Length: 110
Image (cartoon, rainbow, N blue to C red; front, side, top):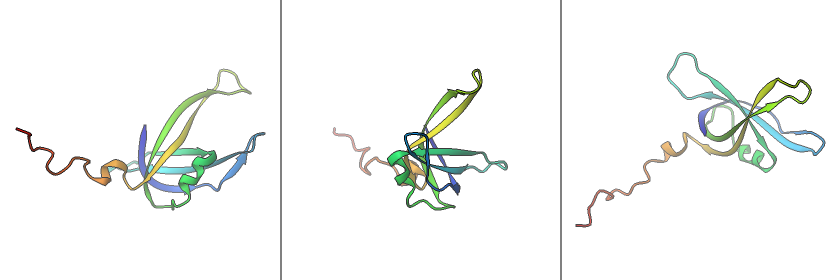
C-alpha cells in the first residue's frame, strides 16, 4: 500500500529492544481537499531509517507501507496495529513524475 501526505512530525532515531533495533517514526497528514484531514504515524526500522535522512517537516512524500495486527504479550486478547514503511519518495509519488508512456505510444505499427 502507499500513502501520500505532508510530514507533520519526525521523531529522532531511537534504539529499542534487547537487540538494539534502530527505529524512527514520522507523522503524515493526508493530502486531500477535505476539511478534516486524517493522519498516519509510520515506523521505519534498521537501514530503512536512512530513507528519512533528507526529509523535513512540511515535505510532501509518498511512503510505501505494510500493515500488521499484533496481539499484546502482556494483555492477551488485546490487539494493536503496526504500520511500517519500506520505501519513500519525495513529492506525490509516481503521479508527480508524469506518465511513463512515450509520446508516440499511440502510433500503430500498421
